[in-house]
Length: 286
Ligand SMILES: [Zn+2]
Image (cartoon, rainbow, N blue to C red):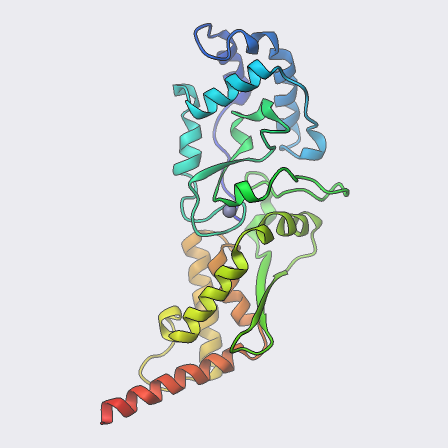
């Protein structure tokens, strides 16, 4: 989950320009259905794409197919499409916060809203969470919808963390929402929780337990550490990850903020680190 700048594209002018081109795939379908498309584009722009205010309309299968063709084979004027896929936010998925992107998510899905197939503000860089979230975009309540990374400024705060609990030799990990916000809650349930984030967090936990100082570069080396020093290293590493991925809600920040906020974890890691240090000192003395 990450706020990103929306593409600097005038979609309505682009639609007009495409309509005037007689040699491209969407001709003559686009000119026949131009007013329908224009009304939908204006609706999207006026409501920042909020799906509660952008009900789908019927467009012809010919136009739907032609838009899909232009999406897959972008004309020069549609070069923003590969840029969204490969250049915007390469290291953090704006939709789920995983580490990496490489695909494009149609915010309003193509299957329900094919008229927005090449609308720049409907195209969001994402990872494979794109295919896992399906077509669910709204809930019953007006505030229940998927987060839009181009418009939802609340993404610039820490929205989500995790919690490790139970027996810390094999802890239970769960996500925890940090703000009371129905949109965030809906998004976590329908996008983030459908990814493999819990397995990823468990995997990072295993790496941490194997070698705390590899995962925690701020941890003092070569001597025993205190619980407070471990806690401080969680916070410093979380802050580093916030900066590295330009988001408070990337998976690494969720992991390190979760360590910081889970009961007993700092003391548990302190004991592991100190036993490793003790073993190393003993080996050096032999
Ligand atoms: Zn994702």
